[in-house]
Image 1 (cartoon, rainbow, N blue to C red):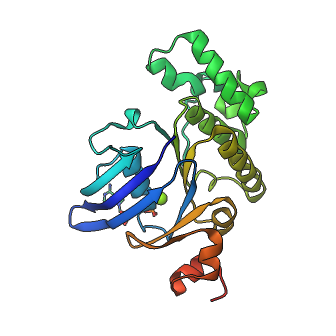
Image 2 (cartoon, rainbow, N blue to C red):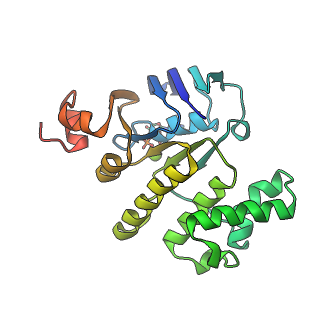
Length: 238
Ligand code: ADP
Ligand code: MG
């Protein structure tokens, strides 16, 4: 079970206010998609949720617990980035088990968890390969596998498919939806792909200039965009 609450989060880099007071409630097992133009603060918000960046003000709560002073490793979440750097000299299995190795999980236990994630992602035949012997889509699946083995209750995806070609993106989208079902996790997903947002989201959060323009289900935003900006982003006719 994992809910997330953002309570009037702000973030400034020096004089620049990048996030200007974001309030948001994410329910347990919800699939929430952040959309908005480049530079509107999507990644900064994700990094604050992950604990990789501290908020200038405001509170972040997971399951009602204040997370502001809790480090990234102890928040029960895992993040998958656009640039999913895998360790080139390690096999797929070792890449996926690396965080557990750092945490001192014994080898047998690591293998068990890696095999389970590999089954979900259909990576079993590739476990002995090195990253350079994988396609882009397979590498991205390994990156997702690395996140799965940690059994997070919240997954954060920051434009995870934007380096993949269109056909592969469609396939990965279906796989992520299946993953969401199978893992029973809360997912927060950043994209600038309108189709991804419309097809994957329970709830879409439209951001502009560090603020939320509108929050709603894909159909709510499509049929009742609050303004032209939202309509333009969602692709509704208004
Ligand atoms: P998005 O992911 O929506 O494209 P970002 O969150 O990456 O946007 O960036 C939002 C704004 O914050 C941008 O104007 C960016 O230049 C600025 N920014 C992000 N990180 C830093 C940083 N470490 N120092 C200064 N400015 C930053
Ligand atoms: Mg970004």
